[in-house]
Structure formats: structure tokens, C-alpha cells
Image (cartoon, rainbow, N blue to C red; front, side, top):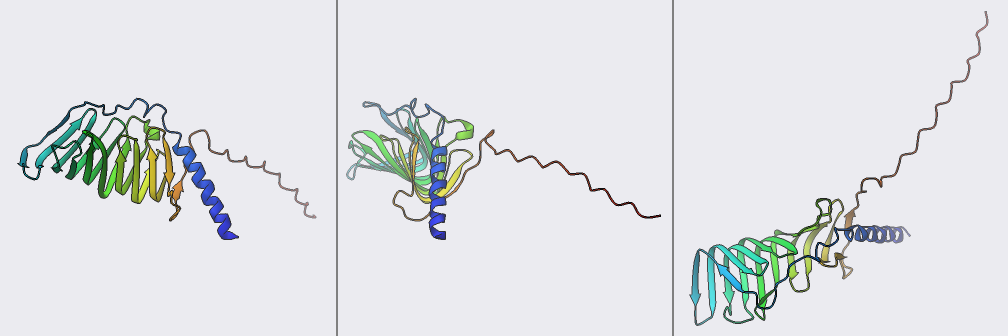
Length: 227
């Protein structure tokens, strides 16, 4: 019976937290810029070496890869099948990934170019960090995790491995979080493994008013002492 009550409380808390997380600023994702077909794929770095036989490139020193509104910065990088429309990139040292919708920071990352377009990235760190761009300061969606996977085309971010996630005042910790930055919807531990630990902080004006103290009662009269 006690376990059932605890599970009910956990489900109720998760439902409230999901509702709070869905209350982020409207229009953030609607105005996000996306990579369009035909956008040029550019890169630059301080040092570059190429192996024509294996079709690889290695970069070091202030590496920058850009396509449309998307940017990846790192201290070093390597690209395989670089002349193909489906190349694979790896990045090391202070990696920063920026799109029109979100920003990631991590120790290392990999990215896939599909059909000539940056399609997805996987960031790893201790921890890697995610932040949605353009939201209100008091409802800023951000998260931390050991691994963050970002599907650029779908606008979906998956955080796993010791996840912390917040939309401003409210926050929680879990094993896996899947967040759609365009619909502003979040799934917490969708596989049902582990537990979600959340904190919901009341917004201004929603705090319960403390009941007024009852009026003090006059002290009963004391009997007069005899002469």
C-alpha cells in the first residue's frame, strides 16, 4: 500500500513537472532557422592535413565548420569520406555546436553529414551541456548529461547518462530525457527504467496564502483574594 501511494505521488509529480516544462516561451522554435538544400558547407582551421587515398582531412587550431545558420567549433577535428555527400566528422577539445534552435557544449562530439547536409550530432562530456536558444530567462530550457544526441532535421534532443534538465525554476534528474525543441515537449525515462526526481517551485502569485492566526482570547478574570 505504501509503495502504491509513493508511485501515485511520483506519477502526479511527474505530470505536474511535464506541464510546467511545457510552459516555455511560445514561438521560440517557430522562428528557428534551418539548413536549407543548397546551403554551402564550409570549414576553416589553423592547420589542415589531407590524405587523398583515404579521403580524410585532419584539422587543428580554432576549427570551424558552418552550414547555413549551423556552426561547430572545436580545438581539433577529423573528417572521413570528406568528398562524399555522406561524410563523418569527429571533434575534440572544447566543442561547441550552435543551431538556430539550441546550443551544445562538450568535451568531444561526432557529426554526420547526410546528402550534403549536417544531419545529427552526438556530444559527450563530463557533462555535456544543452541550452535552447531564444527562450525567456525565467523559462530557459537547459540540460546536462554524459551523452547528448541532437537530430538537427527533426529538432529532437536526447540526453542520457546522469541527466539534469530544467525549464527555469523547475528541474529534475533521470536516466533519459527526449526533448522536442519545436513542440516543446519532453519525455522522461520513456523506457520506464529508473526513477525521476523532480523539484517544482511555485511561480509568483501562486503561493498558498497562510491562514490568518486566530484572534487572541482575553485572559479569564482572576478571583479576588480575601481581606
